[in-house]
Each structure stands twice: as structure tokens, then as C-alpha cells.
Image (cartoon, rainbow, N blue to C red; front, top):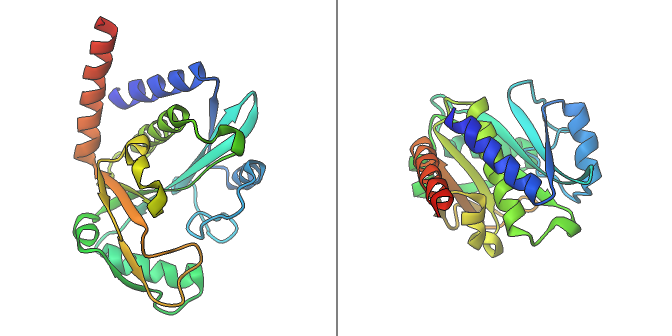
Length: 224
């Protein structure tokens, strides 16, 4: 109920700002909608043309303005099982980038934390007309987080990557932790990856804390 109420709140705030959303796990539809955003590059981890996603494994949330798709964001569920995160990144990167052992190492805090069932966010993209509006991005990302937690309630951690220039957006994206230089890649670098990428993340406990904190903030705002 808490997740549903928070999702409804973020959706209402988006509507007040003049935006609506469309969620989809129809991968043929997703391919068409991603093309409508004009995104010039899709990360291999979320490229529907290169991944055999199955129903329940991933979904996309699209941002709409006056009925037109102006942005999108993807999420996928990664049940690691007994595999450690560094092995997972190395193994999947080899296939996604067609490189032999592209990963040198994963930063120790990341390797120690990211275990169990993970939710991975990526391919955030807004068209030029929707960029620069932090209030819109904030509500959009938080709505996506609520929807993923409702879809995969047994998650242990949520995470995403951000390039160094975007590190100040951690609060906009709504994550609690950040580890700079989270990955060190071997040469040649995988396409679009650099060693200054940060990993932003938080645990289920962090999300529960955010839910409680949000309820308190809303109560104070309404009282005022």
C-alpha cells in the first residue's frame, strides 16, 4: 500500500507538471517507442535488439508530453544467486561488448554490497525539450523506483551508473549511496564506458526509510 500510494503521488506530481507516463514490457512496442525518443545510443544491457528479454524480466517507463513520447527509462531484474557482482559484470560485458575480459575490477564497496536480487536502472533519456527540468526528472525517476519495487518486491539492491559530470544528480535520481570510479576497464575501453563512472544505489532498507521519510514530509507540507 505504501508503494502504491507513493507511486500515485509521483504520478500526480508529474501530471501537475504537464506530463504523463506509459509503462510497457511489450518488447516490440518498446523498440518502437525508444526510437520515438530519438535516443542516439542504447546501452548493450538494455538494447532489445541484442537481448532476449522475457516477460517479467524487464520493463520500460516512458515520459509523455501532450501525447508525445519525450523520454524513457528502463529497469531489469537481475537475480544473481550465488554469483558475485564482479563476475556477473565481467561475464555479461564480454558478450555485450564483444571483448575478451574487458573488466579489470569492480570497486570493493560495490562488490561487497551488491548481492542477491538486483534491480538495474539504465538508458535514461529525455528529448531536448524535456531536459533541464529537474522536478520532472525527479518525479519520473521516483515513480520508476516505486514501480520496480512493486514488480520485484524481493529485491535486495537497486543501482544505476552515471558519468562523472552527472554525479550531482544522485538526489534527483533518488539514491542514497554513490561510489565513484566504481569500475576499472581494460584497454580498449568498452564503447561508452570510462573509468570515472560512478555507481548510485541503495538497499531495500534505504527504500523503506525513504517511504517513511516521504510520508513525514508530506504530512508536514499538508499541515503547513
